[in-house]
Image (tube, rainbow, N blue to C red):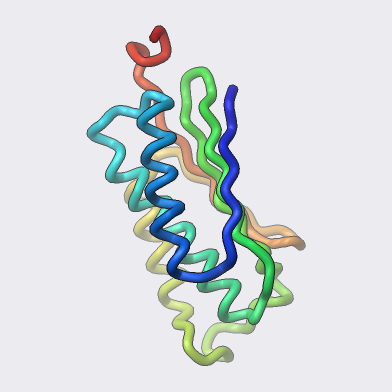
Length: 139
């Protein structure tokens, strides 16, 4: 089991890099070529959501993306540092639309069959996984 970890400042310009890295690692892990666009889009949405939570809450720190090649699954975790207490209530912050958060989660839900969204005291985590093709595991 190999893991690639990416941490970036919560700025929108870094989301593209996270998408590109996720697609490259997914391809190498053996995720089917026809699913790579879904991986790329889901990671982009998850990272954009994390960046938005940081910016709306005025939170410093980084967004963490962990890409793990398991035996039969490719797992991606996107973790933000936006604890519920640090994020303003919907409509309380300027420059961020809370509906973007809901829409982003809806898009991710449509792209990923195996999805888990959790919130904790230290922030939230979106866990997504895709099957790895048997042919590439044997190589």
